[in-house]
Image (tube, rainbow, N blue to C red; front, side):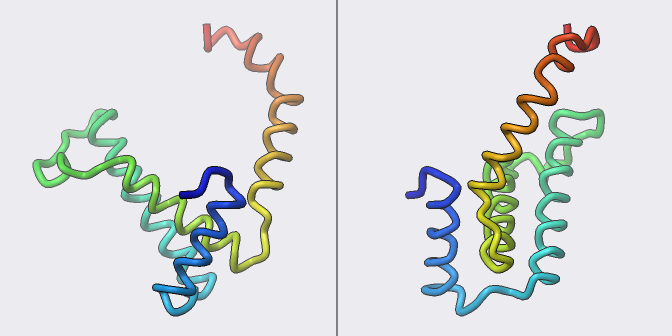
Length: 110
């Protein structure tokens, strides 16, 4: 399977082309992404938050739901021409420069 984000984008693209017929359009995928994020939120709110977990939610796999979010995110990156590995690397560089001292000096995190 894929190891880096660039490889993951290729795995998703190969899957779409061999099994999925075509990408859903960007608006449909955005709606799907919102739906999948909602499923993650439901698990987090009920399992780790203050809401009680329904019996029907106890078998939900957080990892599987996070993977759904990742899959749709990779689809959106592919169909819009985004190099997600490059964007992620750039974002990590920005966050490292901008946030290192800020977080180290945040008394709320001690």
